[in-house]
Length: 34
Image (cartoon, rainbow, N blue to C red; front, side, top):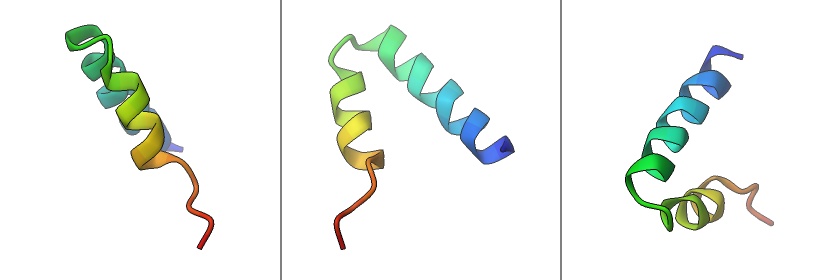
């Protein structure tokens, strides 16, 4: 739970810094098919 919250905060800061960061974050952190 804490890990998830931490990732969310980091992602939020990245999104605020760079509007296009969310797409990259989503790709990097999405569940992999393998």
